Image 1 (cartoon, rainbow, N blue to C red):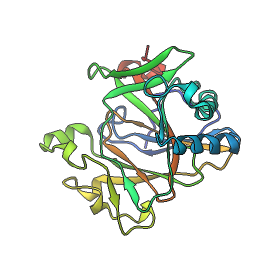
Image 2: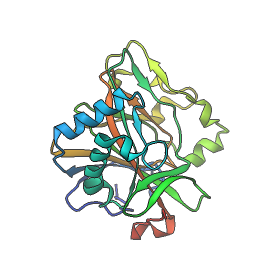
Image 3: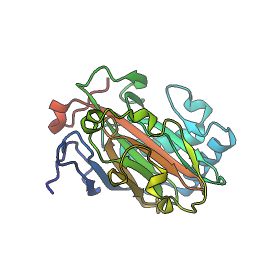
Length: 258
């Protein structure tokens, strides 16, 4: 399958194209897994997770609900991510999220990203902006900072095909739910993750654990791909970044957030 490289990626990244839609290779269900070479000190990671869990906020959203001054440990982790991932890919930090151990696996709600959420001190980008029209799309990067794998459910079907069926995508799983009876996300039957969408159109991707040197980053068109995170019982520590892309500017990287 031909790879459509739409966005510039760091030269030192190991890139694997996991999936690309035949009908919409440019703005479809394209999923890319890359590895960034960066050795974030373990103390930086653990202190950030401890800070988030202790404050019971569990989510750091700089420039909006969270102030970097109020989250010094998490802000320090964000600075490492800015240098290793965000600046090289011209994307902005959306959030850093931590979850402590829990009794059951948790599957987030299925959704498209319809708004741009990002923070970059250098580019003076901060806040939340609704996507103004179909003339821009959102390229999302999911960064797994945990020493355990992270999982993401993706519906491989292009938006136009879902719409042509008259399917109410927001009723597929409008709110998150606990998955009872499964030990690991990979054990979950697909039938438990969908309602009307055929099982054959659902896939659960594994984002590898961070080993201290190789930082896994999964990228997708989150404004085009119906998706949801799945959190294991051992908890999580992950970050997400975003950037707006104009389809007619994709060969130039298409950075659009101002």
